[in-house]
Image 1: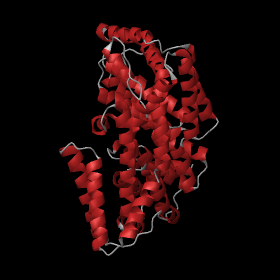
Image 2: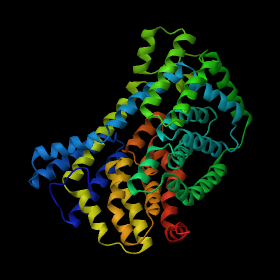
Image 3: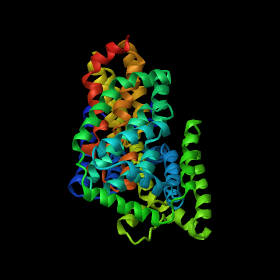
Image 4: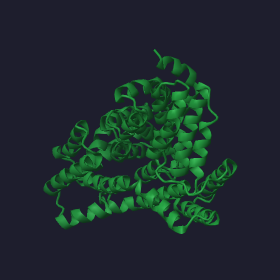
Length: 458
């Protein structure tokens, strides 16, 4: 059931106590002291190593848990490398500048947040990747919001909400496929069923974003025109700027793996940048690593376009490795297995089962910071419970998505949280109160658990 076999079986009280201590430690350092999340994660690793040694777990076993935990995220680590290249190559090919320029042509500040949410959701469904959506159209929208004087926190919340709506509802999404596969439900039956909670969350979020959107003013419109003029003056935007985006969409449509799709789009963007720009090849390779630095006469555009590169992903990658290694130690010391197994013996009613499933998925996200493990571990743990309670498997699959997939970007030390904060330049705790779709999804799935169960039988 578990990816790393525990070498110790703590009592349930002990596991809960350690869970509280760990979450309190991480929260104190990040919220109260304002440190980078690396620090409390490393301290948590030290604490778990000490706990394991005291419980007579050999250092070799502890080290194995640390390494095996980190291994589970190697796919994401390599993906982050190419996403860094994608952003920088899309900058010099003019793809991101063209997206921003087009956005200014159609979007004013009236209903701005709800439009950002909707467009990001549509693109998220078409791409099937929340991270790719955030790193492309999300970067464009955050720049537009900054130019218009909109709230960066609410803009980022709208981007995250839309991107993870797409991550839930797209048949191309890896988490959507994972949830249906782990539970054993047909993919399209799964997508149909999660619409019971996802559509209401979307509608409510859209209304809230519309109400929060600022009124259009001549100042904001004039600012948008100033940005457009500066973007056009960069000479980055050409008709070829749209080709890398088209390549990515085509690859996504044919379900080509994300790593290959992003790499191919980056190579195409780089090739066109070499033709349309005055950059030498040694400059292009430098931009691949260090990112693009804009040098226009309009400083806000310089800040907007100075992004990307492998180097920009190293903060994210280092934290992902630490967080997943930390998760591996939680397994080898038996803390997470004890918490999960204890739940299997106490659940009988429909509502309590669904609520507990959602709480477990959220808890795994908080402890480990990895949405794939949240889906896999919770799914494996609860399959037997749902079978005994005669609950349809699609209810479990839906709950895994509602409380597993969409919660990850709300955890500051999680894979998605760290990546999004780095790419958008807005901290997780800043955008968290405004990621309405992500906040509403688990609430709706728990509140209407009984009614959604009746609907699932029809």
